[in-house]
Structures are given as structure tokens and as C-alpha cells.
Length: 250
Image (cartoon, rainbow, N blue to C red):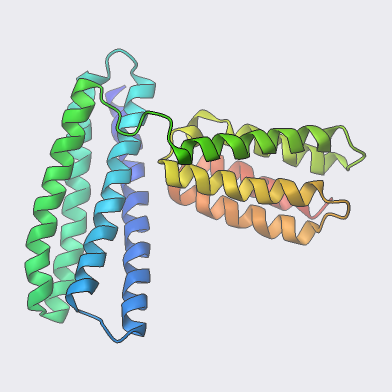
């Protein structure tokens, strides 16, 4: 069990780092376009990208451990702590490389603040995990919105399966409904889960249209597979990729 948890957290860590790097690159592009690269706001925004990505990693890792080790998850708190600090080390190494290239004093100051913030974040998430606290567990507006969309998807899928649509369209709709209700997608951070649900909703709506644009469905499924590969397991992404390949046969 411990090896399984370590392997999955390692996978999550790799994806989290890629997601953080993507967010940082978008921030750099944004501030470069405004002529404000290496300003205080520039480094502050990058720190926020890193903290958000690190939070998502810790939350996702905690959810996985609780799912695979119900009743004994506290025994694996060291794995959560270790994973958080390994991600932090990888992040700080990248930050240090960027600062060495720029030599910016503002960046150096905010680097110190970032390291302290990540230490605090890891400590808080580990403490929450030990006492079984799940932040934001109560039903909020985002959760309600997600459930509403999933309900709409289920209704649309039912209509598609009862219609005269071709077999591939019906199977695709059913697979997508199963996807949004799968344990792995439910375990994603709320923003990532809502992104998957939104994309599936758009695809199902196109499948439900009187004249389905199979090229549009295929492209949307490919984008969905790429997104899922960045936030969930490869096996789930592969299922969607296979649906994309079949879509052209509608």
C-alpha cells in the first residue's frame, strides 16, 4: 500500500509541476505584454501561481490517500509530508534558476516569502490531514453548480440513447457520463473537476444536436483527453482519446 501511495503521489507531483510551470509561463507572457516583467506584481503573481498549484497537489494527494486507505489514512501522513516537500524543492530549484538569470532583487525578496509560505502550507495541510479535516467540505456554490451540470448531462445522455442517433454517438455520450461520475474525476480539485464537467457538457450538447458536427466532437474530445492527462491518470485520459478516434466514424 505504501509503495502504491508513493507512486501515485509521485505521478501527481510531476503533473502539478507541469501545471505550475504552465501557469507561470502564462503570467510571464501577460506581464511581458504589459511591459511589467520583473516588477513586484510580476513576482507576486508567480508566487500565487505556485501556491495555488501546491495547494491543489496537497489536496489531491490527501484525497487519494483517504480513498485507498479508509480508516488508516493517518498512517501515511509521512508520505503526504514528504510529497509536499519534494514538490517544494523542485519548485524552489526552478525559482532559483530563474532568479540567477535575472538577478532581480525584488524577485529575491519574494523568493524568501514564497519559501515561508510553502512551508506553512505544507504544515497546515498535513495537520488537517492528521485530524481528518477537509477544507471546503460543506456544499458551496461551485459544488452546487457542478451537480447541476452533471444532472443536465445525465438528462441529455438519456435523450441521446433513446433517440435515433448512431451507435457511436450513444456510446460516446454514455462513456462521458460515466467519466464525470467516476471516483477519479470526483477526487480532483474542485476547479479541475468543474473544468472536466464543463467540457463534457459542451460535447454532450453537440452530440445531442440534430446535425452533429463530428469534427467538432473529435477536436473537443482530443482537448479533453489532453486536459485530463494533466490532472488525472493516463488510463482515464486514454479512454477519452479512444473516444476521439472513434468520433470520426459517427
